Image (tube, rainbow, N blue to C red):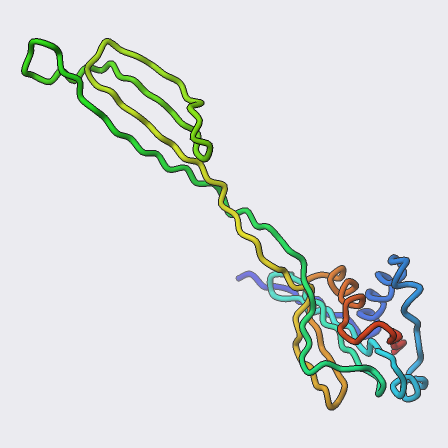
Length: 205
């Protein structure tokens, strides 16, 4: 029987992971300040957003998810709903080639019987342009075989959200976000929908 080991992180270790990532980012390093729990009440009276907690959750298949807990100050402008922006992604799901064939029998002059010879004439067109880029092979009559092969590259565009809103309480001024990567968590800190003038703090728990 195969057993899976679940990674366990302390709250301090989780916050340390986020802190180290912030220190590697020049922009966020100068934007986010560290505060102690004793300063939290006064910070939450202003136009400030505090990262209270950062969790790393590992599934049975070792796929990490990152959860960030935010607290918004009394002067932060809160929307009725929160949805993080995303990136436009083009996903390639494979290629498709469809082949059409048609044949026309030739008749020998002076004979009422059809002559189906192995000789044939083939034209191959590469789809989309209508231009004959194919090859041509001729025989001495008998059967004409025309082949048309359109080719399609199958893909679709979609918007990949930076993060998912797990819980948002406007009255309690709290927000919980979930991410697929640490880089997405950092990106979200720059696109939070709270206006342009709020300050960001990281709680040193």
